[in-house]
Length: 205
Image (cartoon, rainbow, N blue to C red; front, side, top):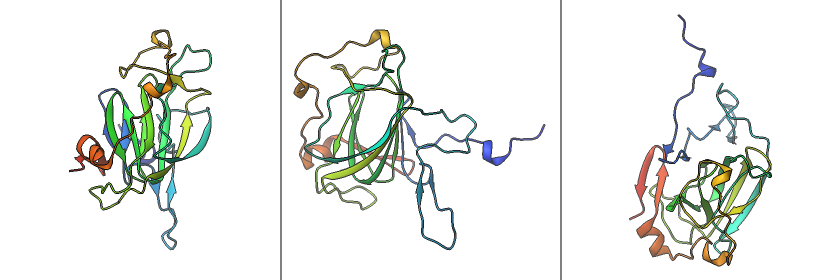
């Protein structure tokens, strides 16, 4: 029996978290240089060559973050609140920070984050002056490109525990300051966060 052609062969990439979310940095993050005679780089949210790539039909856009933009922790569902919705985020430039199910990650430029529906998460920009193991230094800003599996909204949630269905969602109705990404100093980020560089999970210390 012949093997499938190369364009339909898929390999696991990046760092897979226990909750199903994934952080991918480097060439595995759908980064392409299509022309050998030109320094043009393509960053694809969805790789078009995979036979098991999930189709995304929700909102597609970008956000320019500073450290003053600290999102409240949330999940995504369809607008009827019955189905959980996945999200895909590309850190286009700058250095981001994401909390995924309570764990703190610094996200290097060019990284792709697959946030699984039902996993609580929140974003902000990494404080200025944090040096990543690959030499990149944060400046307190970053730009993300986001894409949702289907039309959705922000559903605020207090818990950091993933949920398995829309019926498990408990809406947070208090002051959003209680669930916003915490305001962290450079030293606190270095002490607490991890980062994915290439295929390695590294500390910042």
